Structures are given as structure tokens and as C-alpha cells.
Length: 196
Image (cartoon, rainbow, N blue to C red):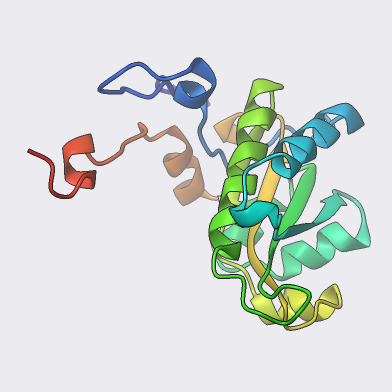
């Protein structure tokens, strides 16, 4: 069966850099191609060098390659459709927010800063020929228990990382249809409050 894939280039109201215009979140990963150690390290380095409030760097990661017990554990702690497709991703990364500083004070910007780190990771990965899909549908308590995370370390999302596969690799029809739908975003004017 031949599936027509529409262009994935974002239709923007002003020019943006190519790596951002071309970035999208697939569910199909090529299981015959591994993420190289250099690609993985570069993605994590991009996360490491992202900005944070007061340079607190309130992010930690559990990084697991397909075929390891850690990868299987992460898959077990995904919700709904995420379990159906994410097992094929060569790498899964649990994104963790450090919610308190060394003195026990809450780090109010931890989740925001972790989001920036995950975004930097995704842009670097795409630059290096990989694709990323972020998932919020996770079992937080299950991941916390599985990886021995205390109450100051909050799993917030999981990143699937790998080389893009074709939609025909997805065994679920609903997911195949989602894979080929055109990208869309709200108009910019709807996002800005108080603009003339």
C-alpha cells in the first residue's frame, strides 16, 4: 500500500530557521537504523547548554536504548497509544525536573527550564537527521519507582528519539492516519494577548 505524505514544512507567517520549519513529531521510527552515540551525545549536550533560571540547570534524564530493560520499563510506563508505537523508538528519554534546590527550597522555574532543555534537544536531534516525539502521557509514579527517583525529582515527559520511519510501519490504523495528516497551528494573532 502506498501512502502519500504531505509536506511537513511549516507554513509560517514570517520566515523561521529551516530546522524549526522542518521539525515535526512522528510516531513511526525506522527500527533498522540506530541512533549513533555521537548523535545522542550531541542531543544531550544541546539540552545541557539550554538556558535556565539562575543557571540552576534543573533537569535530569534517564536515557535508554531499545533492547535494554530500561527501555522496556519506560514503555511499560507510557499511557494509551504511546505504548503502541513508542517501543520501536531506538532511544527513549525520561525528562525529569529537579523541583527543589540543595537547601530544600522550591525551584519555581524547574518545569519551564526542563521544557527548554527538551526543546533544545529536539532541535539538535532534528539538525542531525533524527526525529523526536515528546509524550506527556506517562505514569509518573511508575517511572519514579522504577528508577528510584525521590520526591524532588519529577518525571514530566518522555522523548522518543530516532530515524524517521514510514507510516506503513505503524500497525494501528488511527496512528497511521495521524502520521500523514497535515501539520497545523493556531494563527499567530490568536496567541498574542493585547496586540493591536
